[in-house]
Length: 464
Image 1: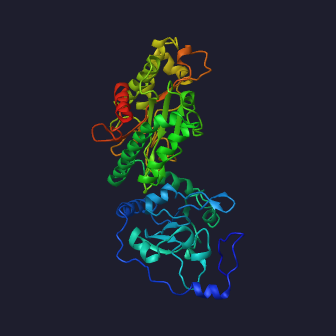
Image 2: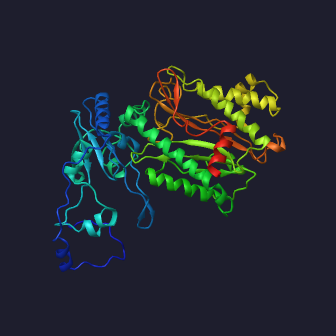
Image 3: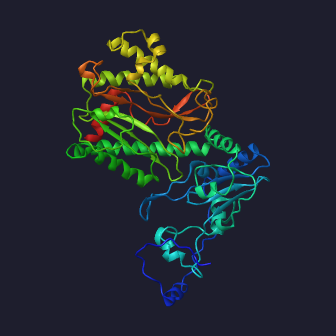
């Protein structure tokens, strides 16, 4: 059978003479004595916990496959979070199999040989000359500290639980079973409590993100003069993300003025006006794929106007009330409810809503001005553990080691006639990352100021 290569339509033909020449004259560059990835011992514990949850069963977790962006150009690959959690491997088309015995085998596409193969110089998707070097099987075993085999040896005959929707070629090889959903849920729920290594990775992501926010503030004067000031600042933050991590953990929201009221504003194509606020929601993803998720709402002039400060202070007090509820044993929903009570009290005091705060909590009318929840779990995914059962997550209780965001906001739409005119078009969100501790919660993002006075002082220092 001839070798299957991913080549371009405009590739030049290869003569027999060139093919023979390309197979010879290469130095031996195999690595020996590689240090295991720092995550390797932690991943081994996770695999053992997974095997113990489904004893005597075969479990199949793919990394994911490359996806075409345009014609023969792929999107930059990002492995599935569950696969990364269990292996530390971030390559496409790999598959982790936990056998009924509990033994784990990582099936991967190793580095192609220089003899007997044209892949290394002709294959645009996998060739070493095109996309860089992959480890061979021996190197992979040293890096990941798990038994490794060639992906071509993968056989999926017989019953198995499969993490579905990640790799279509894997899905097609195993009949769908009711147990697949249970596997997906457990893979999500086992990440609810972070281990020591994960917390350290998340703290690195938060600290790098803090530096990215500082970069953005320093760039505000130049961005104010740009036709696409939002995109200018997006690029500034993106540079920091690529310098210190893998990339951004999600598309950055750089929303000036009324754009702040679009919860997932990622067009980032607007001008900046020094009279407006800037809502920056961004996070850096580490090389190990853990992401921060922080939001600050900043006055582009460096100082809040009286009305901007009024709205900001209400959100600030709501966030403080929410943070105060965080401790082991507290219900997950408690921090959101605490924040929303403060929001209701403020909207009532302003005369925007006439009903009492108790009535507003019950009717939900306040949600016109604050549409979404006030936080979520954080980790490998920005909205981590999303497939967990409600009783384990949304309706569950907090545990030491969980990492979450607290992010109340007020979104006062420009065309909302229920609002006093001076409030219209103002959007404010304050979001921080916290880890639940034995007796409360630690503010991981304490390096960024939250109080309006502190925000103004911080911006003044950075702007000179």
